[in-house]
Length: 403
Image (cartoon, rainbow, N blue to C red):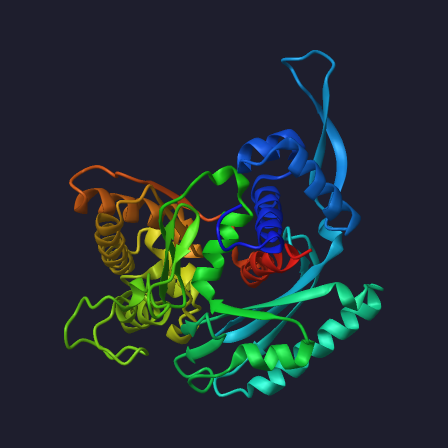
């Protein structure tokens, strides 16, 4: 035993090591667990049996040991039915609330609009009604709701569960965690939406391997998160990875963050749409003109992608410029981080034409080659609820380690 560590603390740490290994790696035999975390098979057997008796783990399924014919190993895994969490994803214009098991198995979901200046107390009350109705309607045990995760746009003090600045959505320094904790009577964790999406990407993609690099989200602005060996680097003030607020044009357009000329003011959704609306016409941009029914106010980002792909040269120029600016922010960041992967989130990156232009710009800036892998996130716009569920699940694992 390490000096200064009590038996109870050591046991809790070992329990967490087992739970975290199974959560990230899936079911495995006790012998493999022991080898992975450096405990004796006897100790792992004792701890796993205790957690089975507590309802945290379960046994099920077998694998054959190929090196010893006929020898079978019993698999141990987390009993994901033992507890569930509430995830709340908050961004401009909408809120998504979801009840889910820790492994991302959805129980129920609610989505509703949100306007800037909305009262957060009303938002919490609406979600509380949804949770109550869902628990009653599905005959769930309310005691199994063990954690709440909240993902919100803007700057977040994760340690104190405070939303520092949502750029006009809520008041500054909102004690968002306290509001949800009072409503649900369980612990709450709050984090930035992009960092939460990065955690969901890692935790719900077991085939990913170890990632060090960037998670990049486009729309409505441009957000980023720094990943080091599948863990997030938050920075001293929890503001790390904010690609959208790199300055690219000193004295340029004002940004919601209070500065001027940020990347977001150039490549954000509204900025791109505004540029297209200023030049759309039936002669030089016929595809976009048709898609927006001749009304610039109807233009959407997906229309612009289709317009550029279909040969509207002025729109293609706008999109190429956007690809170049984002590529510059990403490549410069990766030069500092020296990572192995850039994970992209957003419909714009999923568009084959834009992805190709973006990749080309990265190679051009990087001297002709890419030193890191470039791929789209497994999390889609229909899966945003997984972000707050993932941050809640990580914290719940730490809570469950106590005997």
